[in-house]
Image (cartoon, rainbow, N blue to C red; front, side, top):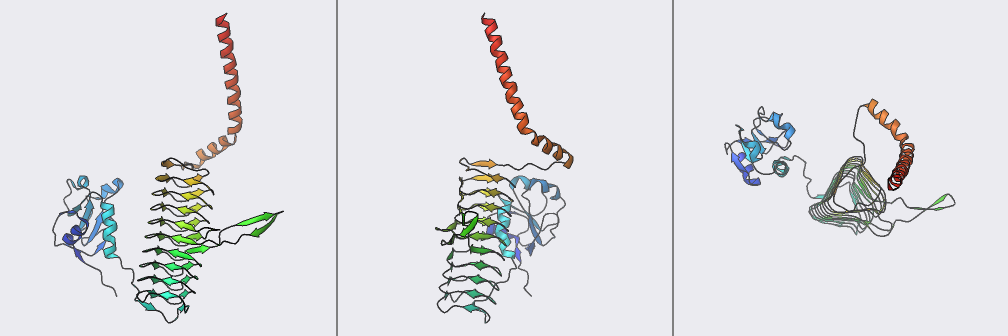
Length: 353
């Protein structure tokens, strides 16, 4: 059984460059939420709505901004960005098992595949012809690595990840279970009602430091590669269609659907359930709120929405009923504007005479 790591407050403060207010020798063996943390656990306050729990928290120490630390009697690690510090320190307490280097006896590796001796190839893994597995890569049970696919150093694939052929993965990439990269894009030509399949001969290119959530799918390109830039973070159950390009450090929440040949810029944030039509471009530094349907290109940075906010069901039904009459109301408004303009002109003519 893996024993819990223990660090002193002094050690933790030094790691994140925080001002320590409290006993440097106090031991911390875990992390917890503000209202649930105990005397040997570290917590944080990053959202104002949880400030009410600060006075009653039993945590061994709290990561706080200088403003929130004012008047706080407990131990604190004070710094500008508590949530970032929490993210950095969380890795010290991560109990995720580390696979030992080597190839499991039940794995199948093609003779011409290249597997670094420091890589860990789990039970039932398949590595096909010409594939390259880099240094310290970990492949969970029953992963499939297609022909000529490449995984850069320090990659970590959870069980049951599938890479089709010609998928190129950068360094330090994390891919969760059930993700499928390089599936055939949805491309068909129609001839008198009959669909003819278009061969998808491109690949998929994933940059460095990318994270891909469970059951997310990224289709291969029809001609050129589908491209995911460096530092991109994709949540669970996202659909990325063929020839999509996602710029560096863009983050996308669960259940988004991005249609083919769409280009998304750098440092964008795409909230859950967003859909984008194909062949559009989204510039850098765009935030799209949840359930928005993006039907045209976005050329200016900023926040964009199209979904309606929740309201009581009775009010929503009234709004929906009014919406059905919107076209008729617009036509009546145009008629009234014309009548008003005619009356105004008539009045002007009378005053002139």
